[in-house]
Length: 193
Ligand SMILES: [Zn+2]
Ligand SMILES: [Zn+2]
Image (cartoon, rainbow, N blue to C red; front, top):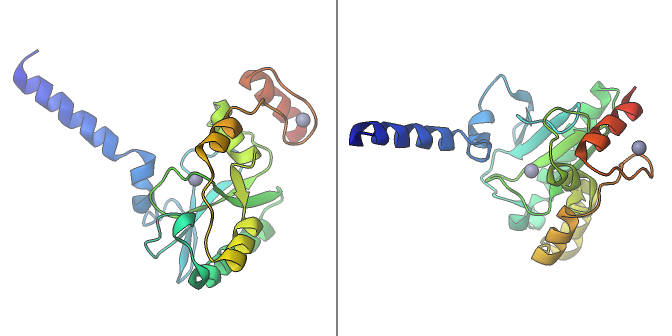
């Protein structure tokens, strides 16, 4: 391969990298196609890789990187998140839940609003599934409570994070324990009908 073509390839790789979802989040906040609702303090966007029938993200306009940067001054912001959640829930039939990942993967604070069916072609791995169905998913009410009580959010230990991610698969709607992801996905459909 010539030096020139390898340089071109490297440039292409970089463009691809820049479009990674974790970096594209701030762009998506401005993209009318992905915006569901917007207020003075926050914006609701569609998750690009939904892990259930409905999957949105609520983000502040303010540059707050994660739940670990929250203090008591952000309680009003969180109440606005909850109001947005309630508005969205009143618009749809599916039961929704709201919460934050204990170890966030993206550069802006975001609350997930997700329907409990977990039926989606983007749901592919055990980690995807466990990050919404174990304690790794920190319910909105818990975060608000902890913030009111302690003024900050305590980090999850790497050991607990690891063990939650490797938790045995378990249906989030009954006691069924599938052996693998294909079995789980087939089973989840039976609840959705
Ligand atoms: Zn997240
Ligand atoms: Zn089940």
